[in-house]
Amino acid sequence: MVCSMASELDPTALVDRFRQRAEAVRRRGIPPVEGIERKRFVDQAKQDFMDFAIIADADAQLVDGVLTLRVDLTAPPAPPLPDDRPIALAGFMGVGKTSIGRLLARRLGRRFLDTDEMVEERAKRGIVDMISSGDEDAFRRAESLAIEEAVSEPRTVVALGGGALMDAANRDRIVGSAVLVHLDMDWAALEPRIDVLRSSRPLLGGRSIDEVHDLFLDRRQGYGVAHVRVSLGNEAPEEVVEEIVARLSELSLR
Image (cartoon, rainbow, N blue to C red; front, side, top):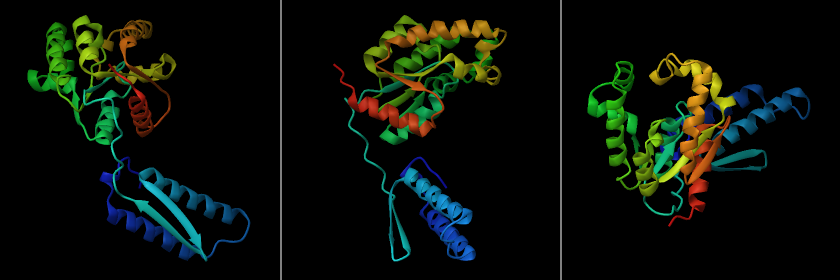
């Protein structure tokens, strides 16, 4: 069991995991002094410990053949940030703004807002329906209202729509009211995702891969106003969150 937040842990499940591992060791018996079986045993023990270390603060001691593993289930304190202004996540569609945003909000003890979800809740319509039916202008107006509301809320993490920064008024409002973080994924990493994204991103429908690339480059210019840029590769979302937290903690804003 691997969890991203100590507050989400189930202590009973942790104990069960310990018991299952202990029983497996008893069935196998004491590991041989050398050979491939010992290597497998040691590798599994290392992996188990790393799982728990990822979950929370953990350490281990081996004394007289008894392995004691300590896991601190208390949530880590939220790191100091420049102030309580909203943290807004920008980036091209499909880079993970919503999933990373939810994790970041939990990590910092903040409320999470998604402007796309706010638009759909107000309009009582899905964004796919709005754009595919020719109502993109109505969507953009609703998006601007959602952005205005979201960045006026202190101590929030806000996931922005992929095109939110293309509007100058939106861009100025976000930069002036929030800490803007650009989740930057290069085209080589993003391109394999495009076919999967088409079903849920109507703006991609009917565009060739070259046209999507042009849209990517056009939007990327708008992301240049961000206070922080975090490059995305093959990292797990939890690793991206910790990178954002570290960068924000170092940030000095006027």
